[in-house]
Amino acid sequence: MTCAGHRSRRAYSQMRISTRIGATIASVLLCSIPALAAAPHAAAAPYAQYLDAVADNNDGERSGGFASHLPLDQRALASALDSARAAGVTPQRYGTLLRQYWLAVAADNAGIDLASWEPAAGLDANLATVDKVYENYLRLYNENPEFYWSGMAGLAGISFAAGFWDLNDIGQLLTVPGIHELGSAVGSAIAELPWEVAEELPRDVVLLATDGPSITQADIDWYLHRLLIKQRNIFMDMVPMHEAYAARGMAGVLELAQSGAYDDYIIEGWLQLASGTREGLAEALVRMASREQNQIIADQWDDTAGGRGTIGRVLTYATTVGGNPDVPGATPLGTFRPLTAHATVEGQRWALRTPLPAFNWADREPRWDYIALDLVPAFRSLVQDRPSEAPRYLGVSFRPQAESNRLIVRLPDLITQMTSDWALEPA
Image (tube, rainbow, N blue to C red; front, side):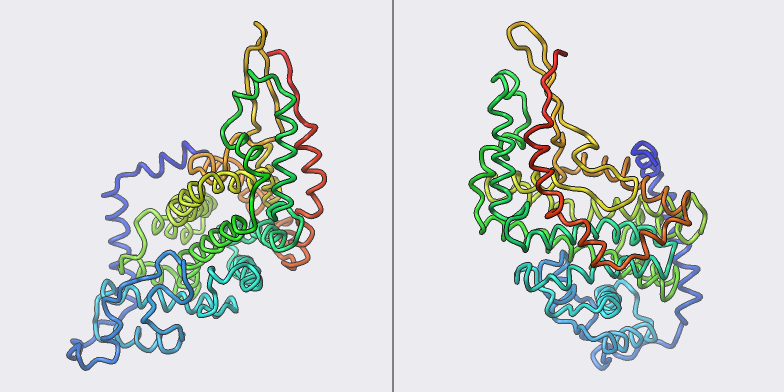
């Protein structure tokens, strides 16, 4: 699937998609939600307090669910939801209740306590939950092999979880000594270049060399907090849809759509998944990955990259340098689009080839290019072209596999690469 193909699909007539989804919603919901007698007076209904609820935690920045005044108990939410459905209340009015219910189902199935999942508490307090999020993505795929997105998220999560553990250990890439060492290594390499070449290097590379050595533990803690928020936000948005489909098929997803929680683009993705065709499953993977990266956490990446002065750029670029998603066939971030700089020195044109990535993962367009052009095709090839190999990767015991991908093993080689794999050649 190319970016061009992805964009062409997104260019479908909105009216055409809306008509198709609207018709499907009507037909499925009419069959799955019985039309009952008129609802009793709202003031007397036990579910009335949950109608028209405002989501005050929509981006997952705090513990709890979407709305702080709604319960987190799955049974209490189910009772209120069933009563509202039976009374003929429209999904638009119980939309937040509906999302809270499926989030509670998702958290219970993942073994996660929503009340204690608090990003601000820091990494130590959330390490077990970090693991459970990615373990749950793999569980969803292994129980529902059509859930390509959750399988890919689980595999990518192996390397992300390993990175979180590394962040919690002294001396690794995103601890203060590790950032200092990485920044100094890049700075040493730059210092040996002609000034004409050095000044052509992107700002992120220069900042890593100049500001990386002065990173503090408070900077690291701030960055970890931002990463923990993004992980929670993705779970809250994506996993309830998967649980609704697993339990009720398209009826569950379309009820969420009718509540206004999800747009036509992602609902079309679920319709493609429900088709069960090779093409439909591939398209669903692209659409779900796009929602995750281009809608759910896009603004949060922007805020992180622009936060804390220059520190946001330094830390997001440092994680790009060390990024290596654990999807077989996927390219490490540093080699997907390696940095090359050109300059004229005393009348001679030179080309500098570096081991550094020419992009920052926090930036929307190159992040999506990598996912659409490399990560998604690699995962799709695994599950569609080599299905006999897939269980070896997707049926793994999560923690041992993540331990094998820890940066502690790769850091010495990475630092050596940062200092030695530079080549200045005549262009």
